[in-house]
Image (tube, rainbow, N blue to C red; front, side):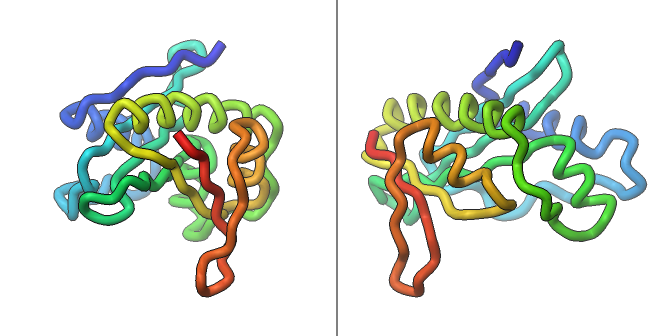
Length: 152
């Protein structure tokens, strides 16, 4: 069973420590550019083990649109180890995890004052699977890239 948790800003580094634990590369410095506020992080755990997390943040300062990004622990560990994104399509179990994380992020984004949540395509099947699960609408930007929008 997936257990969701709203992660504080202070605890975000703990997620990265879990991600990098046991990998053959050191954890990078996380003191880079902060997320555009307001933002939030939702983590999911199965049987106590970190499965992944989502982050939502302002598309632009003052925007009513929030951008959603996600990370699945096993895939990200593989990406870090291999040096490139995985290319196999998302499994139903992975999409179920991400959909639950995205749904909770949507609730928090609405509470933070956003009118919509937007995400783009990443590895095959994830963006579309989340969109189907949450009832989001596809759209193409001015450059023809496919995105998904969930009105909050």
